[in-house]
Length: 365
Image: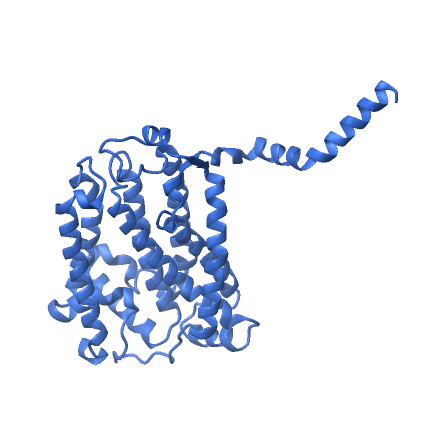
């Protein structure tokens, strides 16, 4: 065979074998995807260390299902409750989408809390990761606010009463609570403004904080294993532990995401998202969603202002944690003071939640 023909055939075969690789290289040249392939230590591939990723996947499922629901929801007080019922009964797979949205919200809240507990137990909020911890605290607050607004949007008795409490709290705060006043924008229903916050403002801020959170993880790398000697840096830890590219870590998260979507789908079918009757002003017969039970027990004891003070103290403790617990030790067994305080806080929240669970709704009046 002539040399030129052999060379041409070899080049053609090489091109046919590597066209996929060359396409990926072309995309990466423009988007920089390989920047995600930074090293991740082996211990960070355990399930407890993927809780943040699972929380992010729950957020994506919320966005996807929320886009569908937004096509059929009317954020006007006279239509809101009926539009939710129409989604359940008239929209193809509407009940499934709403159920997935409802359970994904629960999953995101639980995932965020468990993620922060893991970070606390492993001391991963310590220097130089204090800023990322504060971003996580801010996202937890936004998730809580998203759950509140989602409850109101149903515009059933539960949502109406939840909004009533928030309006009262806004009045209690005076000028600081102006946004929750129905008079803030007289021509626009407060339900419409809460809808805007639920579908645009809150997800938008969470998305920005999530990107910043991931960039800081890349900047500081995954925190070292807490059993390593105090003061061990991420670079030092990487020298003695196997690593994999973050892209491999993402593959695990995708697998977890598929499993999570399946679980949420089953829950949506077996336990559909609740929807109550059209609200009746002047009565209070419901309890708030379970994640709000503990501050409502405080309200039963000390009045409406206790909700504000309880939430402020809770988030203040979370925010100051990395600046108070500054010791080099990361393993929870070596931090008895921090663990003792955390157990007290957890016990108080658990007791307050249980008390609301067993307290009749009418007592809350």
